[in-house]
Image (cartoon, rainbow, N blue to C red; front, side, top):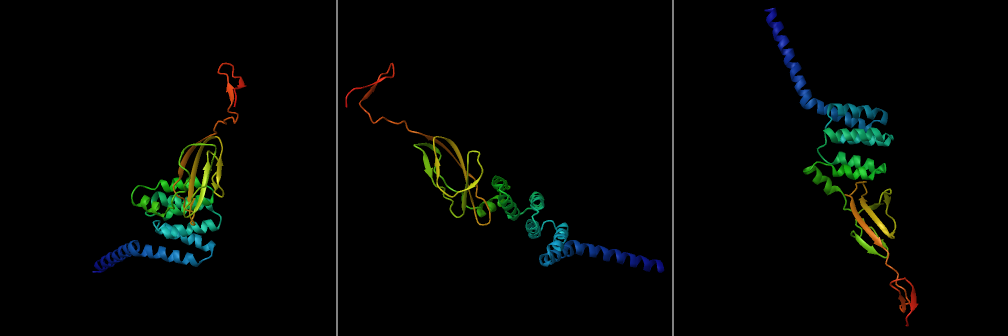
Length: 235
């Protein structure tokens, strides 16, 4: 009889343990992760960081917790940790545009504009790329590619945002005044940044600027086709 009761108690304990594990895995773990994230939001930075990390260890798919920890790292000047955290999320847990946009903002703040644009361009085709595309500003506009004579002076129109440009292999520069191009060949790249440091797609233009040959005002001079000499032939 005693053995029967011992077996019943053992089976009951196993059932309780299994039920507790199922509850923790299905409801308890997310609840604990959310509780830790909420507590971290009110804690000082020194205590908030381990809470956020513990919450992410329980639920690595939580985008709000990952971006909150990223913002904490940025406030502390830990840009490398913030970048790594977002890269990890993009590689394994990204289901929406938030992680892409947060990392693009870090690249823009670090003067890595081209990397920010390339990151957003690299989003997988489908819902994610369409959603990111809808959130990006329109590209800045410049005169169409082509050949121009007597120099080329123009403005860059950025629409709703701040235009930036890069001429040939120069650095990215915030647009502030009309550009004047003299004789030569140029590759111009332009982009717009909105208030959230989200970059538009890059627009590229190619220009060839030629100088017109000067025509002498002395139309009565005749040029010898053999020796190249000139003489006055009458006005």
